[in-house]
Image (cartoon, rainbow over all chains, first blue to last red; front, side):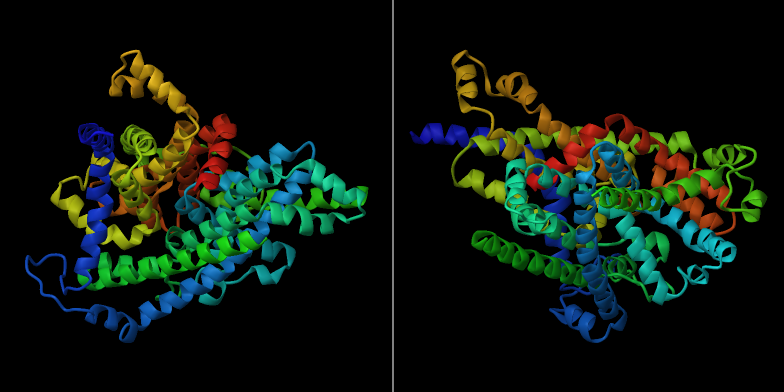
Length: 295
Length: 273
């Protein structure tokens, strides 16, 4: 290709990409770079001047900020429970729904419905269930274990947050798993049945390996979204009582916007969240790719 | 065999009850007076009480909040589709280092959590004076939403034969007209997916509006509902529940009408993503 044609092609490329690039650069790229920069400063968001403090914000976050470290552990605990439960339940529900003839569409419609509703609205509705409805049921039926301080006591509110998140998240994964299950050729399952495999064996040895890519996607998505959990906790407990159920995203939010306005310090925490998500995502993609190749 | 099938149906019914339970409880109790609700939370309302709805409709300024939410979503959606279809198409069609670099630049950002950029984003939005307006919020959504949309368009364009472009060019069609009248109509299936995924995201997103919208006149449905909840807390559940039902009404209707496309869009987006 002649240089002038190549040049023309590049100009056309830039012209088509420019609008997207403009918005992206201003509202995603610039704040990302800005955040990395501010994380090395002591800026408070208001003063026109600030000074570089190197990595001391990062050091402070890990060594002198017990509430931040605690929010990391709390988030990790949440992530482990959600990644396991959400994928296991979604896959199970997907398999069960797929096994139904009539009624399949109805179940799918119902199970997906919570995903249409914002976690804020869902959270307020569950708040009503936890604080008003469950105590009433407990009083009426004598199922006293239902009458707990579901929101106020961190021992139970972790469970409440899980219930809300699963309620809001299972349907989404289910749709993805159903799509994957529908791509498994019927003939293979029939062949396994003829060979005398029980339906569990057929699932374990025929279906599961074939939907492995979907499981990769499912793990990837739940891992990613559960690290960034904010709304579910905001709506139910607001991170409380005290900071007992505070997650990382909320800790960053409060540091920057409600308690201290320490933008530089909060930016360092935000970078730590980014690093965690980044490392986990990369590790997981590499591991999954390798296993997929072996399978 | 029959027993097992009945058991599976039973389990699924239990799950369905669990899923619908909070929505149903909210709906039932929003139709009771506060007194009736306190008497018996679990019963079906003896007499339908619509007063809560009139009350909630007023308090969350339903039409105003709905209008604001629609404005945000419309600006964002139009911008995302316009910008991302142009960019995704051209990036997919152009070979070479520059194209690969730009595509990588967009895709890379899909790893960045929103909470990692939100602090600097508020500063930038403030400087550019897009903070505190619904249109401005929509513009920010464009910047946040284009990477994934470009990714989807980029993949889909590969399925459209290149010969089409070439034939159109031979017929004397310019670049812009080629895109607008030949390519874009062919992108319709993926445009539907992009539209649905982004609409759901923008409609249900809470944190960005919370950071960007300052004046009560610009509140979205979620911000209004959140404010009402903050004001009345645990004291006036029947009005709050009515406001929650009102706030979720538009999405539920949207879902029931376009269900097939939404479920397809979700599966599409995930498989490609």
